[in-house]
Length: 402
Image (cartoon, rainbow, N blue to C red):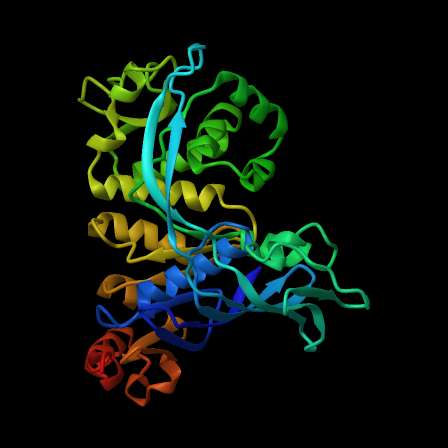
């Protein structure tokens, strides 16, 4: 699976337009800060979230995304309505499962209803309409009878089990925004762990599971020792002082309980490393930023399902040369069918990505244009080092915002 082409228009209070851009198996977005690199990744991630039925916050937007799926190339075009008023909400959370009194903690906040889908069109590679939503009606190819379904959810999500829609839904479900600095502390439930272990009889099944990456890493450690050892070996090549990576309930890791754990009857799934010469485990929070980002990237590359598109924004942040060397090599040579759209300012990263995979991001006002390096005459050179110097001096880069 891969994203072949993408264009986006936001007509809300902060309007902007991304001109059509084509992607390859690995695409490196380069450009000065503020040109629109992160905005491009954010928009792709939000569109794919909308396809999965999540509230993406895409109000007054239009887009077209062309996807290579297992069933061929499909294009999804959509237009959403304006933003509804914000509503005040109160949520009560029961923090103690054994408390029958009904007490808990109240959280007060605000939320906005999901966007409405005004028009949608899904076409195959020949331009034939498979699904068309307009004026509140959805028409399927081969059917004369329109149907009506809630307009707060995309047809991709609503019809995800239909034979013609399932490949598109599954493809868009595999677009993930990398969060290398985060570790999600998930409540540890032994019963849930047993259920997950019973349903994941292979590494591929684990990769395909729709669970947080922390749970995947824990199951990889418990069930698939050789694959987990490979992650540890890769990590130790970068940080040779590391002896072990351990994932499990915080009490088993010898970590201090959080205030949330102390006030409830459950604990969280944590991660820690052990280093030579250090007497106690080092928690995620106490690792260096580079060690956290490197470990997260290694698990993402190992546990992403086949066909995943990873969106990685400035992954070199907080990583020294020792991290960049190894992680860049793995990003450029994934062992499985993975696609990458990454952004970077770092000369090491840019110089190690073939120039034909560069896309130079420029912005004029609210209009963002992404130009293949091959269309910039100044970059016509065989020398990688010379190409990077020429990139910095190219008008498209230096004058990236007008």
